[in-house]
Image 1 (cartoon, rainbow, N blue to C red):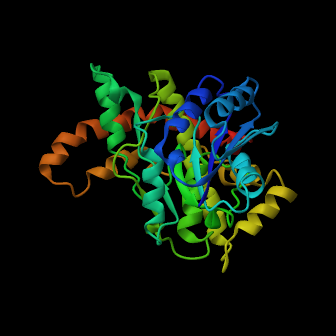
Image 2: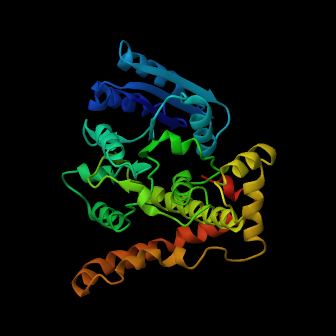
Length: 339
């Protein structure tokens, strides 16, 4: 089997060398497969590409890994995803593993487990990793740490791709083109897979998540939390508008050719779509964006409700400021490119 490991990175010179070293220790790389490592350094202003090239040479010299470090001056993760899937990943690759450059694997068996989960269930088209915050490793956690961990546990996504780590069948990914720009590409990619490009009712069971934690990601500072939540809200709303637009097309076949043609022929189409949805409205966020953390309290029983409600309510209150900031951003012309 031929497997591609794809890392889309922007200004990750400080982390990408460590990630490639971790890749070299993964048990999957010792299995009798052929591998292609693809690093897409998009609009980098640091030494991401050089660092990746040197790290790949150290780790994979003499091993069945064909490394491609590609630099592109054009930013945007969705744009780089399209480039990787349709031009850089070799045509005979069967499985694609996609990783963010700043994650840390829980152990050396993570990628092998992702591959096994995907290849032993023919009904699955993609399998997502299970991210946890790096503060979980701290022997002594502050009250803020504990609150952060509890809140994150209340947002499960068992049938959605998490863009920081996932495996997918390349036969499916090659049928997909993502709109450019797409803020938060993993949400729209999940929707494209679930619905065969918005041509049929959603089938969430096509994507699964590994049940146990697979990798750490860096927890945000307080200020970083608010910036991250603002980005997430903007991405969720813009992606919702994109989904509404694509559903309205009444497609009988995968809508990806339409998306590809619009990307090429009308580069500002997503921005104009977002601008038209915001129009002259003072408040553009759907009400559910303010209350979604409370939805997990429904039907969970009195005991769990009493235990979980304080955290959900506190998280909802904390979300009000990012929601306000996101609403301001969505009313600007460049909202679709904000990420």
